[in-house]
Length: 401
Ligand SMILES: Cc1ncc(COP(=O)(O)O)c(C=O)c1O
Image 1 (tube, rainbow, N blue to C red):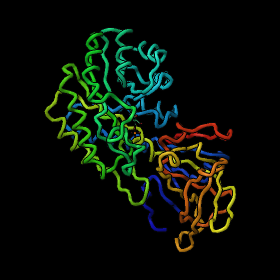
Image 2: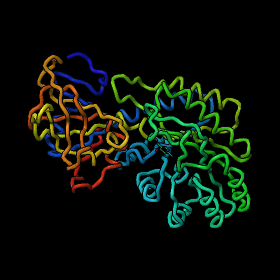
Image 3: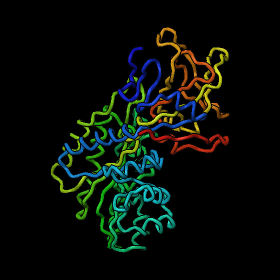
Image 4: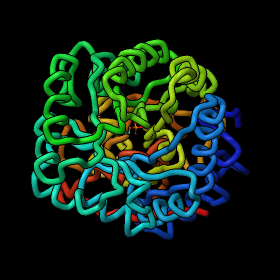
């Protein structure tokens, strides 16, 4: 069988069967008897290792906070906490409790959230060592009223941003006004409110979009430059958090993010500053370390379309439909290695909504009932974003060693 664009040593066909992290995927799926998320601990560690190596090359002190919104599977978080290689980025009090339960100390946790209610603050402020990045002027004021003199971070919106395939939905700061962070026009007021409560602004934060690859690196660098311009007013700042957003290939035409170039951009902008760099990647650490395996329920031609139906829908992994970030469908035991025998088909989920399609008009080896299809790149924003829609929320998650 020719090597496919997504194959790598820990994810490839061997003797006509898909193997992932040393396991036969179809055998695991058969045992699970229902939708199955598989994650590879080794791949997550390799991904974080690559980010660390790149950050070392910047010559600037750094911290990595894993954005747990991407995947909060407890064994995965516990494994990450145990490596000591990263802290964790959270966005809700529930994530705070979960992070602590999985072994992260508050001084290794950074909160960046939106729509933060007073009751949320009551739970966050219990932990003095927790980094809290404020997303609004109101949030600065509410923290100041509760704990005057506390250290805070401020999330700014540099009005420059990036997103996978230049998607507007994945761009968090840019030409279009977004809900995220404090804009330059609000900056004077934000600083005045912080001063009025003796708050010390020890960290500057900006997360400008998700899924960026090499084509977006120039725009990302422009966003870094714009974000860093806020630093001039922050004499107490020790950390600049440049967010997450590092992308992985989703299509054959994508190439992996060049981390050497990414680190070189950071080096250019941080070389002469006495601050540490923080990054908070989610997807980059977990997305290509996970897959969702679904069983084929029907193979049926309807008019001009061959539908392959599977036993899980977009509610289990909303990202392809929400963000047009496809998950490559891969036959776990292909009936034919010769792509001349492959058939064009549309893969449909089991939710009663017209948009519930995993892939449209893709070439696949011939499928039959009870076969298994693995949807790649499902390790991030899959299980974590799943819903109970149509009461079809059941799935199993397994962290493979
Ligand atoms: C503030 C913040 N940090 C980090 C992330 C992680 O992004 P990604 O998973 O694309 O790296 C997000 C994602 O939305 C975010 O909102």
